[in-house]
Length: 276
Image (cartoon, rainbow, N blue to C red; front, side, top):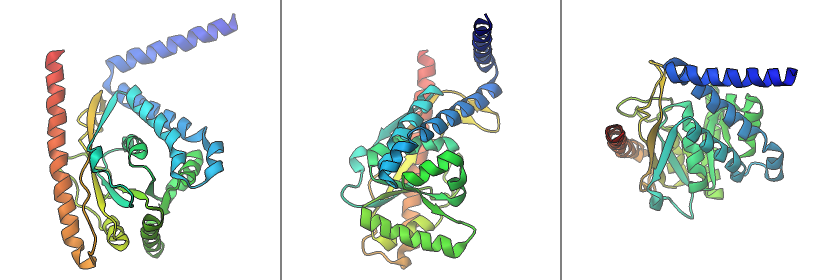
């Protein structure tokens, strides 16, 4: 009888939360974020024993990536990848991606099995986030201490060697921080130094704006975001003197597609509302 009572209470609480989320945008906003974080944490944790069989291997992230993709679908985000024919093959690359939200973890999850042989550069603090930090280390994340500039520079130099030796795809957010405005933020130099040092191409990847999320208004609806993989930009023969031009070319290319794909996503969303 006690078990029946507990079950009934659990079901009642679940139904109540569904009703609250249906009528309250703020509740829906926080609930969706919580559900995403919870599911991502679970799927990053339980495969850890298996990851010890091949430590520091990019394939260790494939199971967590699948979990993150399922979490995205559950909270109403539909990602569509375009431009797979542009993916650099048989060599490493510096993959530049615009950064909007902590939900960009789903973007990495979409790209991981498509680009293959991936790794990311992350701030050192992530290493201390419990099982997620351990999992990140096991699937080959390169940790950088942004406070200690000398150590950070050493990490950047070693990243160039990793790209050349492993033919790795290093995924980098060139804006340096999260931003979801009408244009991309100016790009930081770090990833471009790595590309020139390793003489490997830059693979631009653009994620259209999350029009369905507004952190200030605490709004989180369902929606579609386009992930566009653009043709690679060669760095062969370039030196540090070419850095400004390389940054400008990459920025202009990505910003143009960011604005165009965002308008496309919005137009398709408005069209679907008319059909409904």
